[in-house]
Length: 176
Image (cartoon, rainbow, N blue to C red; front, side, top):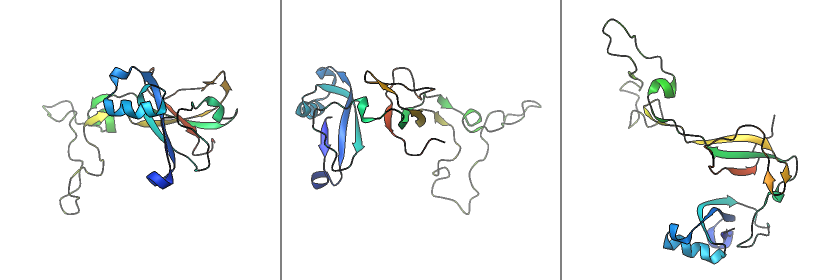
């Protein structure tokens, strides 16, 4: 644990935890000073977790798998792999136009915004179907906990690329 935030000083109760220890030279000087307060070295990733005010956690303490009990249901959050810049046919399942008779409308989006009169300030400000970068968004996976030698065993697929970070928390919804 890198930092403890309290309602008195920050307005809410939370802890800041670090992942993936790294060399001190690979971290900027402001972050290095932040890590030195905890006395655990430098980390390449930080995550803030809201907690109850009564939970006893000290700065520099390690958080292990034993915070979960066997049989607990958890959410494993990861960022799914990106799919690069994608057009509307791949990203939004548009049909596309005809491929014959000199048509110049094959994989183009066509008109997908509203008409002129009831319109927003930007035609696509509501996250509508446009060509853009696909993937790399947070994706949850629901799993059960089986701790053994400080390992978290997860059955099934976990979102994200190999060796990417995942965030494990108590399940928000019950497993069906």
